[in-house]
Image 1 (tube, each protein chain N blue to C red):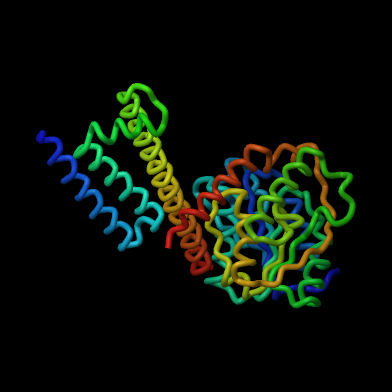
Image 2: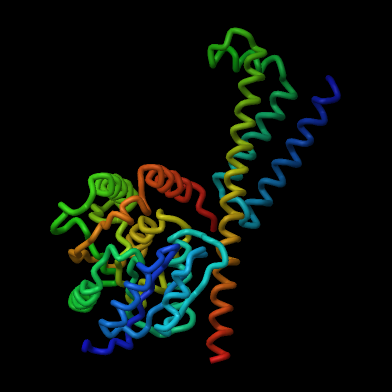
Length: 232
Length: 115
């Protein structure tokens, strides 16, 4: 039995993840994290019905708006309706190892970070498919250009925020560019960002999900557009 | 002087004032408003000095027939309108996301109150 962690919130954005969401939620519960916030981004499958027995907070988008929009809904809920000091974000597709949550939190407190990133590229990268590795490296270069600092894993969905980061970073981009946006805003607000190595599992069914070169191009255009025409 | 040489600059003046207002009320950014004002100014100048402007354009761009200058201007206007449409599309997207988020949070608040 693990220590009960009632002071930490776990946000899990999810879209049509089927039983993968169930696996992630049950594993997180098993580790003693009670405050799980699942943001269902307009799923059309039964993933949300499968987790009902776990008594988790479920925020439901009536239509699909993208990973960034779902993440911000979870953050806004924590910002306005809760007092959690530590917020963990983890993907619903089982690519992350829930054992690494503890590792991230320990480093987060130890180094007094505002944001802790679960970095997939610090240790063993041989399990990462070349396509995903390539896309991520391009995204890292683009994000580094916008922040003026070297970013090693700009697209990681596994992160920890403290309350300071939660209050300052409001995600505006709806889709995958939100990952880069977090780095850009962290740089703008001079927040302390640290990287912690994590394990990642690219199972066959999730290899084609998420980011690809077209998303990369869109990310770049949207970030460039925002930089030029940012509304007040 | 032809009638369009009076009407078009007047429309340009109204467009310019409208762009300034859009900037002052925060609807458009400085850069967007500047682009609009430049466009209105350009259209007004073409109307007032049609030959001078189109000959100048055809010479400076290297187009032999000055009528092509008009086509070029048309393309520039279409490009800008497309940009404006893209901008509007992004704003609409933002509004939809905010609405969807509000509904999600309100539904959760209702559920918590019931419980």
